[in-house]
Length: 376
Ligand SMILES: *Cc1c(COP(=O)(O)O)cnc(C)c1O
Image (cartoon, rainbow, N blue to C red; front, side, top):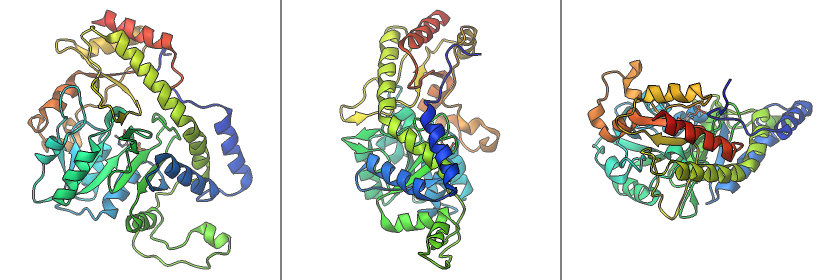
């Protein structure tokens, strides 16, 4: 139906073979593919971080909040411009999400100043999102959290492979939370990862992932353990072996995929220069490396976004919006006001996401940008 889809999987025969090998092995969950995927992901991130594979990105966020003892009455600062999973997970542990605004119309991440404005005596944690794959100012945010005694969670769903000064996003805070949903840079379908450098937090995350149990089925199968204790109440947020097998193949493709996303993004920037359409993060700091997850643009103020969406659709080009303001959803109605985050509100009104995926061709970018210019 689409000439240019918003996103396409970067799959070939290798993913199929990897899954088939798991099915033939007769061991379906929490086996060697999981431990391999976790250790290879940790090596990829570096900085001595350890990784635990989990069911999805939202499970990772929920576990992070529980492991950091976020409780009712606590406030957690989250970006206004993000996917609703951040607010939902904070709400579901009974805490209150507080919205930090974007830094400005070019840097759409929350800034140290916008976080600082939200701090109250009830603030317990900050949850940062590296929007579209572009890193937040992590050295300054880590320093602020240290000074104010706040926990720091990184939602790295957009940014596996992004770095600041050579250090991976997801290894700066107390806990990093990754998503491997179909349309992320590393695609599994459903899947995620939690990462930490803190052995106590890692132990708690292990318990939360698997019913609080002190041994795994595999340990008992291998005769390493006879029974188990339950150390604390836990959930079942485990990943299975088929998903880990896909994850290992996808991790192998991630560096080249991110590099291609960067080339395509540069082509978009070149093609849309002087068009009246702005692509954010034009002034990426020299020591920041993006994962180029999506290609968001800011339409001119006077442009009717729906007409552009329809115009692109007529040319066979799919587009999307990242994100509608989540505080206008029914579940959050009346709880926040646009005045809490005026810059994010302006961006939400004018944002449009264009196709970006590693197997996209230069010609497809040209088709999108030509069609977009015609729509204006
Ligand atoms: C995708 C995404 C999530 C949720 O991940 P799931 O694996 O779909 O649960 C959370 N935060 C952000 C910013 C995301 O883009």
